[in-house]
Length: 478
Image 1 (tube, rainbow, N blue to C red):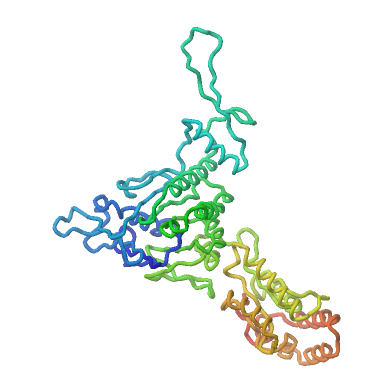
Image 2: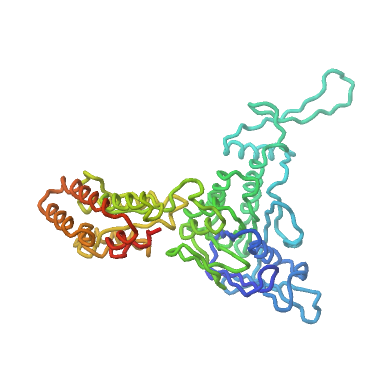
């Protein structure tokens, strides 16, 4: 399926930009004033051209396309006060906002609701749905009762509706803001999606900053809520559904990383961003096909001002093949020579160094670290030179890890760590290599540890560290 959104000269989008290859769920992410709302506005007006004239000029472009059919706004040259919507693509538009701003497609919407609206219950069906939500979220269900004044049998009191739970009387209007927002978010989307019963229309769901009023734990649930709703829908209908969600929540972006049907489009100053995962940076571009959350969560969080070191976490994780290298790197970090990185290794001091076992441990560590929302697009792995491995199956397992990490998979050039020691102390290198060649597997871990400790004591500067590894690990230097 080929999809794109082309914009130019619409509100904060001044240059021509193109967002492509949409997933069913798409997050438009950026700081306040970055242009997120302008993109949502553009989508919302696709069925409401006449109301877009305040933002749409003779050189403006708003065009949304799916498989060569498109919906777009057109400037009427004969009547400049009239902007029109032209379409070969039949679309339904739904909007879920924190507050109903008239500029977000005032007319021709299939659905429109507020995340923070009060909860009202008018019948037993409404109560049943609310109780389903309460049970799902671990809250006590409500029981509806009618209270009638029995003191005066002649009074005209028709009774007062009350709701009770195990904790006492509860007024649904006054439930906590966060719980109400989560209820409204889930209920409206469920109702809208489940009501779609045909496949000839494209359905656009616009959601603005759903994180408002939500605790971070609730924010993290948004991707899974959307995923679970779509899983229950006919796959042919899902192909016609596109969610566009503006957010500046690093919690939402981190949580969406586990879902292949969700993508992230970072925006800055009205322009898409190109994410450079190798250098942990970003640059403005004109076209973006978006990113999976696992490819950009750390960088997006950093872009939004969420530095992981601010809450005491290490700057990054480094997965290592052997403990002796970890000892050297830990020591250099503690001396302030290299960055604040947490190193973990696949082998211990006394652990067998069988290659198959080591690769298995590397696979486990790789899985564990990549599941951390702050590190999965940033952590790296350092291994010995693997060119001499003869076993094709082992090579294939290593290749899978390398493919996943790309530039963050670092293979040392020399055959073993001990070969590098000669750059600092030739005698230590020769002794270590000789002793390892004469020993059995059970004692190798201890021997490697002992000589790594000696080398660690020698390294006291950036120059020493760079010299030891032939500048191959200079990216770690402070």
